[in-house]
Amino acid sequence: MTINVALKCPDGIVLCADSLVTISVGGPPISIIPYYAKLFPIGKYLAGAMLNGAGSVGSRTIEDLVGEFGQTYHTPIDDYSLQQLAQDLGHFVQGFIASGADPLLEIIVAGYSAGAAAGGRRFGEIYSVLWENAPWRLRVLYATDTEFGTHYGGQPQALDRFRYGIDDWIIADMLTRRQALFTQVHDYMLEQLRARGIIIPPGTTVPMPGLTQFDVIRLVSDYVLGPTPGQTVKNIKEGMLQRFETMERFFSLQVAVDYCTFLASCAYAVNNFTFQIPGVGSEMRVATVTKEQGFQFHKVWTVTPSDIRIP
Image (cartoon, rainbow, N blue to C red; front, side, top):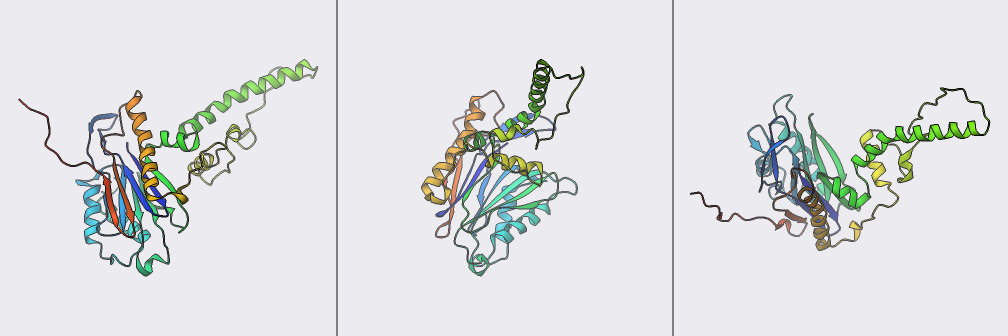
């Protein structure tokens, strides 16, 4: 697994990713490799990319493919649409994926459009090029000019708990345990009616109503049902009554860096201090993208001589 965080604030874009990769062969992880790049620039464009999921397709790493794309993409660096760039990157990577072998992979593309193609935008944009064991699709995350916020991919559990006070797994547990709760309420109501002299034949049961009639989630979230289960879960988290309201629209670039680093550190803590094989860890990479200075690393490992001695 992975953790990567992309934040859009008025001063720029912040990108943050871990660098641990796990190796599995048709089952649970069997090995761990540190210092695996998941955050990198896209050529000389005002853009960066992060990956989670598969680190390679065929014999090519995603870093190598993004690097080649950035070098060979023919759109001028002073007049391009970042959304079009993300779409073209999806087509480019798809060309290296064998037919029927689509991976679990997300490439987060964030930065700025430039020139006339920017359409008057002043602020950054964030997109997700997503493969879910199917050909890729583009998700528009932050494209409205004055819409600011944070997107993260990979292992979101700890981050969701900080931001919303709940995560997908807790929501699933609540829906699963709804049956047991309804059974208790059902039996209690029949007992109370019988105690008041109301004749209810033995064996009388009432089927559990649908979620709209018996909605335990409504206790903690003011949400609306979405067109898909995934959108509904997202709406539940966004509608949590006690969620923390973050202020990305007021963040300076330094505050944004601090916030992204903190969120990533939450995933690091869960993976390092609880009973599980770490899927997040090793060195953290942090970069910014601004109109003035483009893509810049602010935290990245350097290759140094190893202290390991082999006799």
